Length: 107
Image (cartoon, rainbow, N blue to C red; front, side):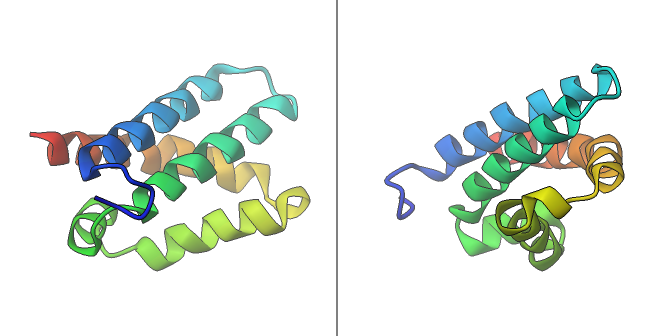
């Protein structure tokens, strides 16, 4: 169990839940709502991933955990300064791969 009292599978499911929303927000009109929603769901997913056992987290994140956690910190601590284009690029390019890797951990 993690410090949150959840099993790794529960944390994986929580991360997947939030990331699935991130992908749907890509279809939203070009307003501030979509980047805000992406930022909040991405941050929540990364929080869930942070509670995974280190070896599982490293497999899921493909050695990029430090950068991913850095993005979470920028969202959490410098929210108004988060670049919407970077969020969109992350959602388009990285989130589908992350979803696939999280699903693989459940099998």
